[in-house]
Image (tube, rainbow, N blue to C red; front, side, top):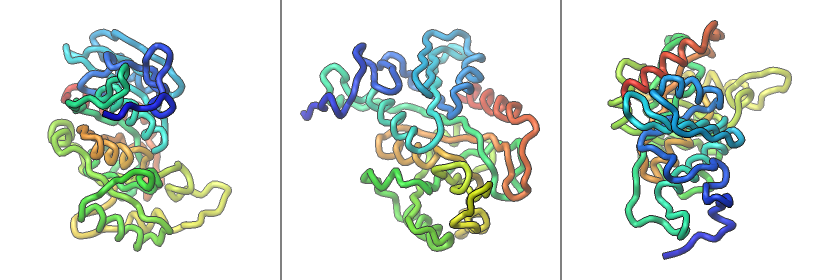
Length: 285
């Protein structure tokens, strides 16, 4: 059994994983993740009690119980690069013996739900809606560094999106957990979420700098293949879905829609939409 080198699986002096600063005992079977560190408190304020807190960089963790069920809530920060760090270390906490630095023979599967914010790219998705993501379409390059093997449908959609947008690289498509979507997503808009490596130009926003792909938003808005449409923009879902598929975890992304890019509107009170989504997820876990 191969042992991980100290330079590859980096641990802190107390035996916790390097970036998250957590130990295996801190990871519940149900994990809620949010991008914004302040949103951890918006989740944990509903807990019966908080048993543990850790603040490390943008990674803030609270562990507690909601209606008797143990939950870990953790912030990831923004972007696919943060997701790669978060997911690798989260999986290491449950599937690697950190003392021996070897992979455990029996794997533990987590239920992970991302509660995020998003901008709709279809005119008929209103600000204030909740979207549950069936697929995540990655416009980032994270999967270029992993042996990610999409299915035939995922590969076909990615190729068609590249052709429609004329991007110089191939996007990737990854599917979320059907089990969690059935459990959490009732009554939400089922969508296919675009994950961008940035907030401005990669999502078609022009401020002072000129865009290399000024028609990107329109091309993504118009893209469809049979019943497959793209519904919303954010910065994490595709990386989460791809990592979960490779590592064997159940992963679902749900989004509070706080902007509509086609109508050019933004929520007057985004926290109301976010808080209602938080309560919905907690009550359905």
